Image 1 (cartoon, rainbow, N blue to C red):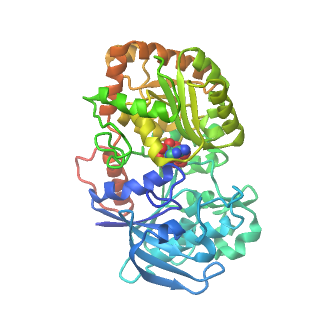
Image 2: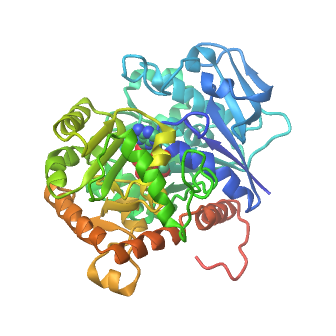
Image 3: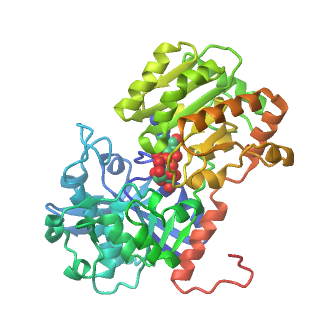
Length: 487
Ligand code: ADP
Ligand code: GLC
């Protein structure tokens, strides 16, 4: 049995702003099948503390980054949780990163240094009777854990830094250094220095024993300047330590045969049942029953996601006979653009400006097309949910989108392998072309159904990828792999 602590700032179903939570929430049970026992170390936000079932205080820190803290271990949301209960840092409702003014909390540097430091404490055995083998750190919020481990007395634990999104880096100025409780060698040796300041993700990528990211293509992309966002040099230097392991989906939370958010259940042999969901969706988004496909979006509305391009071409999509059902919140400009399109096209464009987990399931189960025109996408999960739910993905050819969707060009349709529509480059023109191509495919009813069913049958589970993580853990710990291993 390998004992792993997953250090993360979000985890489904307790606290979620995006795909990171889906991944950290689903991996533990997928890894259990590979003899890996995961405990999740997460800040004690109100949503986490409130969900703890019979938590036990397993460590206490009288002087913890400006207040007192305790580690509380117990089960919550079906997971083994170690909550960092530090009210002065985490007892704030709502979004884990933003205050009521929608801006980053000014003390985020401290809140996530504290999470990282708690990771170090756990790694060195502060919890009686529990000594993990691996600290698996996710994104910049836990980026300092590998540095604390590397620049303190050896704990024997191995560290992994997983990049879910290199755009979020945790960059701060040097004046915080003394409060980080990090050995000065970490500064001297360049472990945390980042473009004249301190970089939390940089620290993790520099100090961890192994690096992963969430798709093979993104692993290639971030080694170059176009996608590396300043970290490409370090990743080049550490390329032998870096591997891309594709995300999967939690196929219990996302199963169209039993999904409680769907009025009609279906499988790949009963896609006609989707009609019931499609009607409910059209009603929810005030769409009329004209014949064209419903293109949908479930997303943070940001530049990364390319949804400003959708604003640009929305009128033309409607002119071509398409309809739009959009769920998301984010940048005001994109929100306003989409709201404007909805006003101009009653019955054709619906926009719900919200974060709504249940509605996201209804969209996947009822819409015809899942649009993901991202400028960069480390993995992306909504196209995977789309595949599973028969909501055919239309994606840009970047990162994990390129790795998970097979474009329906004529050869691929002929060969019977296509699962969606893939376009490049990420421009409004190319997006619109792809929409036209999609509408033509949708009109070829038999071809469309086949593609939809093929997508539903494709393997988007965690099985293969959980095995890859388990093997990586084993390699780090020097466990010999059996001869028939194939990687
Ligand atoms: P990212 O993590 O970059 O936002 P992913 O595709 O990996 O992108 O994951 C996004 C996750 O957040 C998915 O589970 C998606 O369904 C969910 N999501 C995004 N926006 C919304 C929303 N407005 N309402 C409900 N769920 C959303
Ligand atoms: C990030 C990425 C997304 C990925 C998710 C989970 O939020 O933007 O592409 O799917 O992390 O790894």
